[in-house]
Image (cartoon, rainbow, N blue to C red; front, top):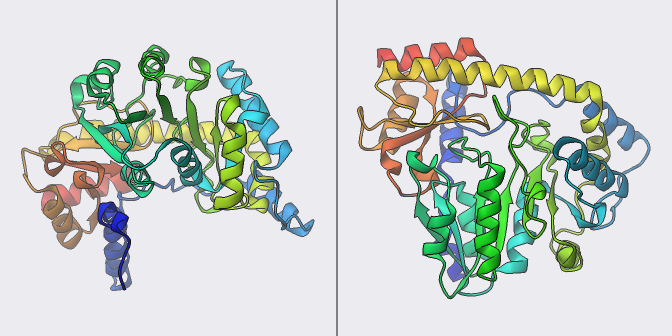
Length: 382
């Protein structure tokens, strides 16, 4: 069969192959420490699960409106008001099947054949691939420790070309955990506005920041498109639920796309997510955030034993992006060896771009400190 030409731009997501290999080793009787996949190890909070059970028992198994349940959109709007002091009306909120659904809608509205979207390298790989899927060209700019691996306004202005339609940033970022300040987001939005383009901000790790509260683009740029998710902070990965905040002028085309792309987000998951904003749920999630911070601090202290360096201590998410150039110049082979000989699964930098990717690895601290300590010991012995 002949595949569409667009498939040539869609690279494999190596971390999923590593996960598959790690599970095969587990099936063969090996004790594997999983530091590869970006998924919290904590289960979904009990109140959310119970709300989901009630929704199923009550027969909430039919389609919702394409924009999402009105009660959930109102709850998200209150979250922006209470947490960020931002005025985001429910009419600007589109509930989506995961953050991936939000990204699909955002990029489908903005990107046509040959259009360019600027982003940092390293970045979450699916961001590049979604741009390619719609016939666009991802323009990735090398971003190192000097900018905390983030795109800057100066870099964006210099790279903006005749076919550029948007810039995409993430805060906190995957794989680096870097956080943008409100002022940095504002200046990025100003560059996009001056050029006649749009800023897209991935905020799916909001809530998971340490020593600071990450600023939201909703506070400083009403014309930005903001992507968020119930997966990370709210720990609902398998429920597949996210949302997109759009400028008022884009609410109708976003809804039209949702109707055609996926009809609506899963109704039972939407009903369950109403419990995500309850005070008891937030209190539990804040306890878990403190545990993530403890794990981060342990690894920052422990990894230099291995000859690894962490050039920028992450302010958010649950990743460390480590420079392993002192021990290898082939992070892909290095990760394969760690899995085969130490039963520790981590992700090579090649998943996230090309800039010094062969000299970096990503560690997801989504397991307890005791297991993190064991992973460090195994690698040290190897």
